[in-house]
Length: 478
Image (cartoon, rainbow, N blue to C red; front, side):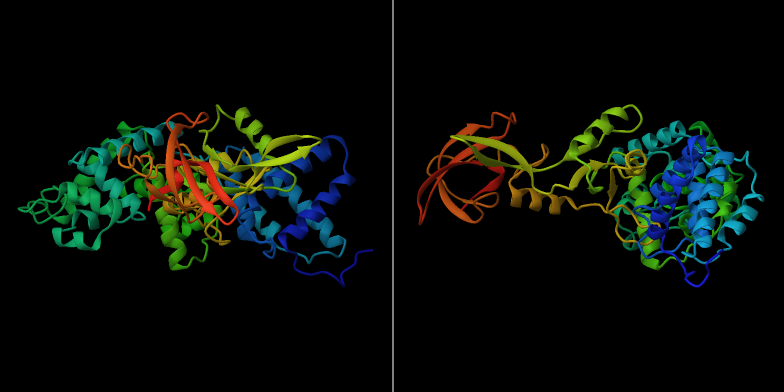
């Protein structure tokens, strides 16, 4: 007999626990199928949704599209949806959740889609060629291909209309910042009113738009990128593809763009999210950062319960050929334990369940999609579409100085600018002796890290005179 008195809206993670318990009712291939569907569902919601969020139709839409974007076949994605629907139905029957039309309405929406339409029309190779072209242009510091830079300017400003960019004048520079300003200043000339050299004074706006379309089509096709009918739609398609690669969910992509871009009809499964202005700006910044491929940032991931650092290292080795390998920073300190009459030194993690890693923004999501069962990455907020949290370099530097453990790239000063000599007065700024004044009595090379300098520092405390080796990056002149 069905129980209904306790039926109620159910939080996602409560539902996951119930779904997991229901797997015991299946055997053989049936259990295997349900297990795969549940694993896909669990991975998608972890790190995106809070424990109090509910299973809603927009959540299911984003999950379904994400499966397609990650390369799953249309039929398999629909099959997984049916399995989760069945598990939710069992939860309703058990009186643990209330009836929901989300799964029924999802099946209706799926039937309106073209299962043969591409979910990833921009190939990795074509995107790589575009990013390489962008990188070359940004490094040169001189005007390059104006249409490439106009397309780039549009992309880093959330698909700013191309005709609006063509109309930018020198006085608009004062409103720009960052990469936008850098691009514009490469082209701005004192004798020309407009920033980009498109002969705007000799062409009507319609003629300028036609020139942009022709030049953009030639540029994008040369790079192997799809042409979506006109330059504006092609930019929207490219922007959406980069955003989705960065882990922005489909509903947030549609919300930022205002509609589904041409060439990505499968994205119409996603209902536009209700985003705050700050959320939109964060997504635009994430995509802009990803377009400058040579920029690396620090992020932090949190191990799942009972996961060890060694397990993550093993997984990273297994997927070495599939995703770019990040630089890892798992700081440890040496702890002495007495075993009998011997002192045994061992390394103890300073933050046992936190791993710092340095990666390009666009590489974070592909990495996490392959280690989701081991760890998750911190985001700027719990809101859907929020960016993975970038740790400012100055914060990483301060943290390393505080704990006295460093990444290889850390420099306390440019090489050759801070060489201390015996009898120099110094202050230890971190590690085991923060704020401790002392005197340099010698210098040696760190045997474990070639190039690093260890200063022998002498200082007095109420417990006596100390002579210790201190990493040069933890010492400053007094």
